[in-house]
Length: 558
Image (cartoon, rainbow, N blue to C red; front, side, top):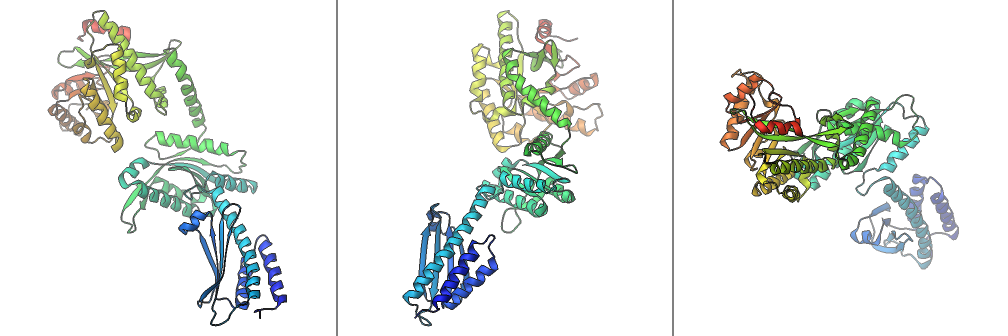
C-alpha cells in the first residue's frame, strides 16, 4: 500500500509545479514542501547534483544540494540521471531505510514523477545562475566588462552615478613580481588584492578585470581615502602563514563623476580613466592621476605624432645632429653622439616632444635603426672623402631588448655600408628587470664579439646595481649630468661619490664619458678626478652634420 493517498500525491504535484514555476521562487516555501514530501513518503535523505558537462561530472566538479537528511539512510531508493540538451547533467537521489519502511511500486512511480519536476526546477535555476556567471565573469571568476556595463546602466537609470569615482588600474611591475614569487603565487596576490578592493568598495560600487593585471571600476566618493590608500600600496600575503607578502601598488587613472551626472556612453568614462591611467604609468612619481581636460589635448598630440611618424620616416624628416665627445687633456674630438631631430618645413621639433611618444610603442625602435642607418651613410661618405671619422655612438631604446636577433639587425646595417665595426658604439640604458638584464648581457656580449663598442647610458640615473657593470662587458660608462658635482668642495657628498665612481670605472678598464659638462669648474672637477672624456655645452651643442664635419677638420678645441 502507498505511503500517501492519491489525493495527497496530486496535491503535492500541483503545489510543486506552482512553486517551481513562480518567479522568483519562494525558496523557503520550496524547502518546506520538499521536507514535507520526504517525511510523508518516509524517505531518509534527498539530494540533487548539477554538473555543467559530463566531464565535470567525472571530476566531481559541480554543485550538490541536500535539503533533507535524517541521518538514517540505508539504501538508494531512486537515482535519476538526466542530461539536458545543453549537456548539463542533473542527478536526483532518494534514500530510504528498508528496516523502517518498504516502498511499493506506486511509491516509486509517484516519487519518480515528483523528482523529475524537482530536477527540472534545479536545471533551470542552476543554468540561469551559470549563464549569469559566464555572462558577467571571466574564466578566472573575475567580474567582466558586461558586469561593469550592467552596474553603470542600472545606476544611470536611477540617477545614482553622480558623485561616484571611476578608476582604471594597472598593477605596478607585476611581471617582476611573477618572476620573484612564481606565476601561481602571483595569481593569488592579484585575487587577494581584487578581493580587498571589492570588500572596501562594497555594493555601492564595482571593480572588474579588463585582463591580466588591469582593472576598472567605480566607488562611492565617501570611500576615496580608504580606496586611494590601497591604490598607493597594500601588503598582500600569498602563503597560508601570512608571512610571505608583497607590496602591491598601482598606476591609477581617476575620473570624479560630477553631480549631477548622466552617462551617455561607457566610452566617455573609459576614455578619461584610461588617459589618466596612461599618464600615471608614464610618470613614475605619480601613482594616482586625476583626469583633467589637458590630458585630452595631450592625447590628441600623441595620436598626431604617432600618425605622422611613418610618413616622416619615408620623407626622411628626421635629421641627425652630432654632439662631440672631447678628450679633456688634449681638447681633441675623440667621438660623437648621434642625436635625432625632427625637421618639418624648416622648423626643428625638439626630441622631448616626440621621443617619449614614440617610446609608447615600437616606433622608437624603428627610429633607432633609422638613425644608425643615417650615421653609417654619413660615415661612409667621410671615409670616401678621405676624412678620418671618429667613433659615433647611437642610442638604442630598451624596447629593443625583446628582439632576439638585435645583434644581427645592427650588424646588417653596419655591414651594408662596410663600416669598420670599431667606429660604431651602441648606447643602451639601464634596466631593473632580471629578464631584461639577461637580454642586455646577451646583446652586449654579442656586439662585443663583433668588435662593436657598447656603452651603458645615463649611469646613475636609474636604480643601478653594481651588477650592471660587474656582469655585463661594457666598453664605455656614460655618467649622467645629474651625477656631476657643481663645485669643487671635496667634502661634498656628490664629489665623494663621483670620485669613487670614476675610480671604479677606471679600475674595471671602462672608458668613462661624462655628459652635461657646461662650466669650467665642472671641467676642473673632471680633470681632478682623472676623467678621460667630456661631452656637453662647454664644448658644443649637438651640431648639424655640416657643422660637425667642419669640426672634424681641426678636431681640437682651444
